[in-house]
Image (tube, rainbow, N blue to C red; front, side):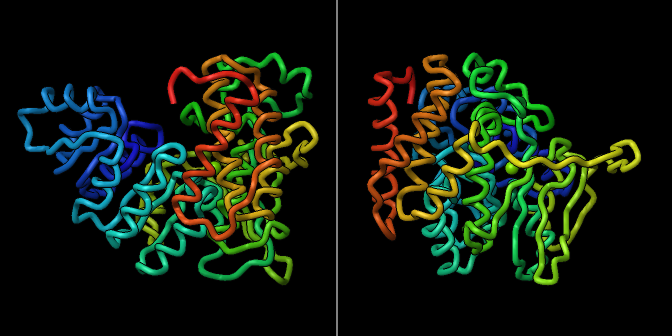
Length: 378
Ligand code: MG
């Protein structure tokens, strides 16, 4: 379990507990208090901590247990490859998740992937590695998990991703300009980490998911639609050649996606509450406001251009969201700087991991240079 102390990580461990799945390794960056609890509960053989100081603290705290603690920025990759687990769940946030995903694939493990950024930045590379090693990449993201269920191995004509619209649905640019991180961190239907919650508020999250869907299901941008669906009951849909649309519905609860990712194609009890259609009443659909929320059309642009351009967009967004969370830039600055850095990116075609990491680093630098600001921490 990579990213074990975050929102998807803790929910995955809940699911593992329910399904009786053994957890061989945990990986997180700094949260030693939660890691200690998890080590005592799940008794993994290995625990990776990215932050060296935090690793030292944890080693002392759990010295009475047989767990092996490894430290450093590469420790998540070591944990991904270093056990006899057959599946690695990757819920690391951002590009940091790329090398651990590749390490898991190279060690012939299936990857249940909640780390969408790495499919955006390096989708072809990751899927190609998975094909060569004959391992599976199973989406944990609710939309892609829904699409996987609607497809059931079939080929669709069109994918329809639903989007909650985030907390600022219906707002114009003037209203968005004064938004502070605490406003953006209040998501109407899903409880998630800070970075993805901001991405949901800007609709960048949906843009990233369009690219994720294109890669996972091998669909062109022209066959992927986004519809705003405020209730978050339909998690996504597919349309077949005969115009039949199949949707997947449930109350919004990530544990269902996580459970299905771990058990598919089998279905197991999840403890998730049943959807009451009468209480739900109605389901509504709106067109996304792409004039205001410009990062959604930007994602289509990045997908069409290909090469390193999606990696640039993703990195620019990670950098800009980081600055916004540190209250160094305004909410609308995220739109403008990610748009300008992405559209002025120099594309490298068929990139290898070094090209992608280089493009990622350059895009972050371009964001800081454009705003003339440095982050407190990178
Ligand atoms: Mg999602």
